[in-house]
Amino acid sequence: MGLDNPNQHCKFEVPEIIFGRGLLNQVGSCARRLGGKKVFLVSDEGLFKAGWVDRVMKSLQGAGLTVVLYDQVTSNPKDHEIDAGFREYVAQGADVIVGLGGGSAMDAAKGIAILGSNGGQIQDYRGVDQIHRPLPPLVLCPTTCGTGSDVSQFAVINDTSERCKVTIMSRCVAPDISLTDPDTLETLPDEYLGSSAVDALSHAIEAYFSIAASTLTDVNAAQSLTLLAKSFENAVKERRPEDLEDLSRASLHAGMAFSHALLGISHALAQPIGGLYDANHGHVNAALLPEVLRYDFPVVERKLSAFATALGHNTLGNEKYVQEMALETIDHLLDAGNAPRSLRHLGVREEDLPDLARRALDDVCLLTSPRQTDQEDLLGILKRSY
Ligand SMILES: [Fe+2]
Image 1 (cartoon, rainbow, N blue to C red):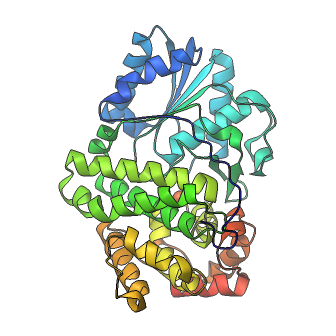
Image 2 (image 1 turned 180 degrees about the vertical axis):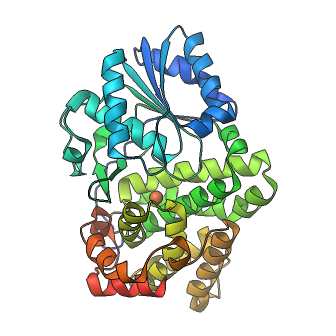
């Protein structure tokens, strides 16, 4: 339940969810069910090389659909990539959009879909509920284990002229169908497997402590934490299919939690850092998370015992030590992700910290932070994470 408003009403909306190993082959029937004839498939070169794009194209063609591939998407998808994709989408006369990839490909697919029915520039839709026309049919297939974009009402795009991230939040941007095939994690490079799972961890934690949390988001956030505590380390070390499946499931649960409870200070600070340095989003969260938790702990005491329990601890008789136990497990998981643990090692310049703190103040994620903050405190967290 929410920290400040335990009796709140809540609304919980998720797309149709299809989850299971080997189910990527169903993407063709999904797109056809949505009424498509010509599919605009948004992905990236890495997935093409790994063979997943080919698998999806065969499924779409097998369902009698024509496919146009757009794979000019890079990490932290850029405004000009969305614009170019939109132009191609219109020129080709496509009617359904399929996004295949990590958060970048899926957010690019969302961005193209937004422009597809609303026109203009992607920056026009920054903030909350700025989209007025429903999007074209959209199917999202995650191939990493962290972003949650396949179930969330968020899209994040890089504004290259302002060198900042634009966060778009609207119920319109959640897709019609989220299709997860955990087998796709088998070809994900180690760096991205670890960093995307760290992103899922951050989503689950921030959603759990959000002031907009509800019983429905808590159960999803806690389930995500339990799966990560159980399988993260083994999945990275041994890559057994059952552990990889747990990571996919953890990402899905964290996505459902944060899409409704929203996030907090880690993501508010991660957005300007990602915009300025084009840094790995999961790594940025890994550098920030411990200090954000230490900052938040005094105001989330009521939920700490359940939090530590979700992470696998027996808290009975150990109530005094739940903070330490939880932090130790988080540290262990961040280490398992092989993430650089300081902003310095991500290329962040010390002289930029005051400006990053100022920029974070405008981020929508701060609206649901459990602890009200200010520029000075944000700068303190950045310095301690440096
Ligand atoms: Fe994230």
